[in-house]
Length: 125
Length: 112
Image (cartoon, rainbow over all chains, first blue to last red; front, top):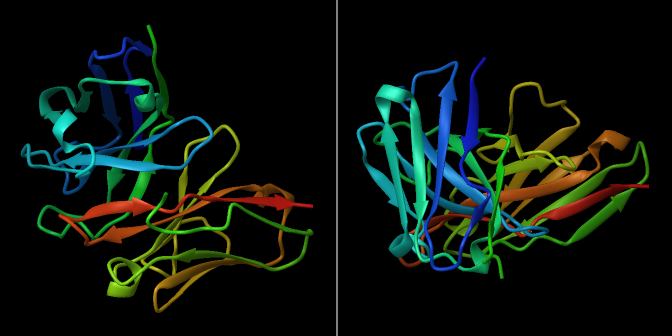
């Protein structure tokens, strides 16, 4: 059964770097989909962070682009998120997702067909 | 402030029909970009409900349907059931600046 599973520290200090990993099981990360991250601050709505293809190509939300890096580790069937210079505003449940669009489909194609269960990251000293 | 506007709350009695709206602009829904809908049950991750405006995701009951017209999209639920109580989010693409996937602020559906 295809599943995504987030892991990483639940607490990060202000001005530090948030790092999360998403493990892919039941499917190959080298399949023809994009892999991404979506976050949800407590009690608020969803925000798309960005995506990576298994060849390392990335695309990011312009509002977060300067602080975000998404990378892929094909050998371990996982992909990762790093958000630098975090503040309390980055406190959120972070979900990893699979976007159904294929490699050369434009960003506006595809939808988030599969979601991980989410992991809460709190930014606090 | 979300690029896509959804009413914060909608309610209906069991068996009734409700419609959830998602209003955008000429740089997103009005430009023809597809709209997708997600259901988030309490304490759970979102789940894809409707994709590409009108298509139900695998396993989604036919009571759920999507539509789109102009700069708006709608999710209709007929025969409302208690288990439909959840948050619902619309999602599309916005072409302003360099382009980005965007979500609505979400609608909390209460089954009375």
